[in-house]
Every structure is written in structure tokens, then in C-alpha cells.
Length: 250
Image 1: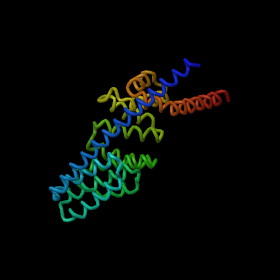
Image 2 (image 1 turned 180 degrees about the vertical axis):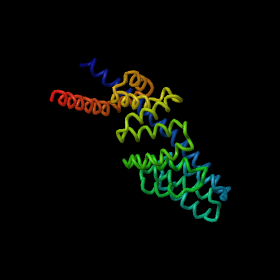
Image 3 (image 1 turned 90 degrees about the horizontal axis):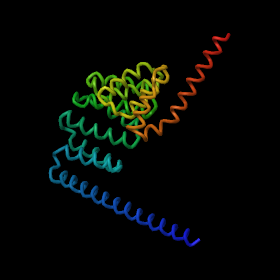
Image 4 (image 1 turned 30 degrees about the horizontal axis):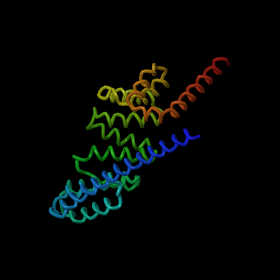
């Protein structure tokens, strides 16, 4: 009993030490974030006619998950720069769209991104529209904007992966495989792309182990979370095999 009591005390002491370290780290991060926000606020106050400062501060607030303040700041900036050039207004609108996307207000984000006409931000807006529709589970509309983004970013692995993910969700496995192959040409160690390429290979009757091994190695968290998806795919394949077997027997 004494031995067990000592072990419990030791464990409690270790847990308390871990908690102190975690609290200290969190407080240091919060202090660092407050300092960064303070500096960005100072930049806005010192140079209120520079729209970049508003955008940068809003971006940092989004990272800090302070969506309400980020929205208020950008709405204020859009009022201040109402007479500015189209690219200035579109940049601030793009920032506002990102706020809504981060806050999971996808309909608001879509409305903002659809209104951006600046050619420099067009591809980025298409990407955000595709991501917003994907988040809503509307893969058909997401595909339209992902393909629009790809027209100017043909070899962008992020865009090709997004197209592959939408095709996979829509059941177009062969086409999805082509886009994942494009991703893996430039990002051979992309765990998510390898995992989803493995699913495509499994459905299409190709060798798939190599893709899952790479996925497990390069992104173990995604691989672990994808196990349920893998089991569902295996069930579908088995059901289809059984159906084909029944047809042949008849």
C-alpha cells in the first residue's frame, strides 16, 4: 500500500508540474499575442491611411479567433476607404471573407468572395469559394470554383488536391486519381494526398498499400482519422463484389 501511495504522489506531482509548464507556456503565448496586437494597433493609429495595417491586424485577430473584432475592424476600414481604388476595397473585402470563413459563416463568406473582381485576387477568391462550398458539403459547386482557380494555377498542389477531394466526394475515382497524381509529383510526402490516392487505387483495383504506407509515415494523424473512411470503402467494394458474384451465378 505504501508503495502504491508513493506512486500516486509521484504521479500527482508530475501532473502538477506538467500543468504549471502548460500554464506558463499559454501565458507566454498570450503575452506575445497581446504585444503583437498592440504593435499592429499602433501602426493603425500612426498611419490610419494605410489599408495594409487594417488587413494585417484583422488577419492576426482571426488567428487569435477574435472574429467579432476582426469583422468590426474591416467593416470600419471599408467605410474609411470607400472612395479608394477597387483593388484596395477588394483586398479589405477579401480579408472580411476570410473572417467569415474562419468563423464558419460560409454563406456570408461566399457572398463576399463572389463580389471580388480584382484580377490579382481572382484565383484566391475562387479557392476560398471552393473551400466554402466544400465546408457546406456542396461538392458540385465547389468543383466549379476549384476548376476556375486551376485555370491560372495549373500546377498548384493545393488546388489540384482540392479538385481531387471534390471528385472523390462525388464518386469520380478515376479522375480524382489523376489530380492526386499531379499533387504527388510536386509533394511526394503529402500524407493526405497519398491516403486519398490509396482509396482511389483500392476502388479501381490497383496496388494501394504503398500509398497508405506513405500516408501513415507522412501524416499519421490524418491516416488514423481516415480509418473509418477506409472501412466504409472496403464494405462498398465487398458489396459490389458480392453483387457481381450473384449476377454471374444467375
